[in-house]
Length: 342
Image 1 (cartoon, rainbow, N blue to C red):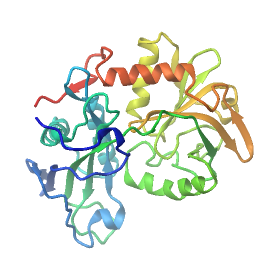
Image 2 (cartoon, helix red, strand yellow):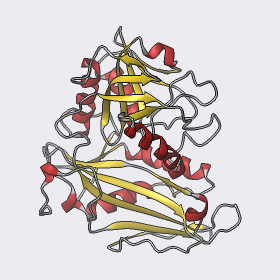
Image 3 (tube, rainbow, N blue to C red):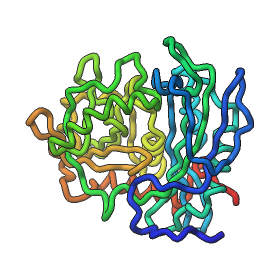
C-alpha cells in the first residue's frame, strides 16, 4: 500500500480531510448496518436535536504504525464502553456489541494510506461521534441518530518536545457534582471554551478546575485529567464522580505500578496539598502527558521542583513507557494494543 504524499514530519495538530468515513443511522428503534462513504458532508434539518439541545457525544483515539510496520489502535474497547456510557446519560441509543470496534477498524483500513509511518512523530487521529439527527422542538430526546467516524493525520501535540506549561486555577466551574462531567459530551467542552480563551488571553496554557461544591479539590482541565507525583515518588490522580474517566490516565496508573514498580493511587486531592507535589502533568489522548511547571492561584504561584525546562523524571518515565507500548517498542499488557489487519 502506497502512503499519501504528505510531509509527515511537519504535520500540525489539525484537521485534514481524508478519503473515507463511516456512517450509521438509528431509526425506528434500531441501527442500520453502517457503511463507509466518501461523502464528508452532514445534512440535517434546521431543527435537528443536536442543534437545538446539544444532544451529541464523541470519542478520541489514535492509530499508530508500530516499529514492525503494523497499524494498531490503543485500547479501543474502553472507548467503546465510554461512548455507550455517554450516550446512555444523554438518552441516546447505545451501539450494539462489537459495532464500535468494527466501525473503527473499517474506517482505519479504508484510510490506511493516511496512517503516518513509524518514526515520523505523527499519528492518525480517530474521532467517533453520535448526534440527534431528526427535528426536535420540545425539550426531549431525539428519535433518530447518526453515528459517524472521521479520521485525520496529525502531528505531535508538542513540536520540538513537551515543555512544561503554566496553568491557572479557574474561577469557573467545569461540572456539577451530579452533572455530566464524567461523560464525553460536546456540551462539557462548549462550556470550557470561554474559560480557555480567557486563560490564553491572560497568558496561561490551561485551567485547573476545582470541585463545584467546595472549590477545594482538584478535578481536571477542559480536556485532560491531572496526574501528580509526590515527593516520595508516588503517582496520584484525582478521584471524583464529575471528571472524565480518561483512558490515558487509567493506563498510566497501571504502567506506574506494573512497569515502573511505583505506588499509584486515585484519591481526592486538595488544592492545598498541590504545593507539596514534586511533579504535575495533564494526561489525555492528544499529548499523552503535558508537563505542568507552574500553577497560578490568583496571583500566588505554585512552582514544581521539576521546573520549567523539561518533564519531571517520573513523568518522563511514564510518558516513555506508555508511548513505547503504543508504538510497539515495549511489550503491551494483554488487550491493550488492537491490530488493524489490512
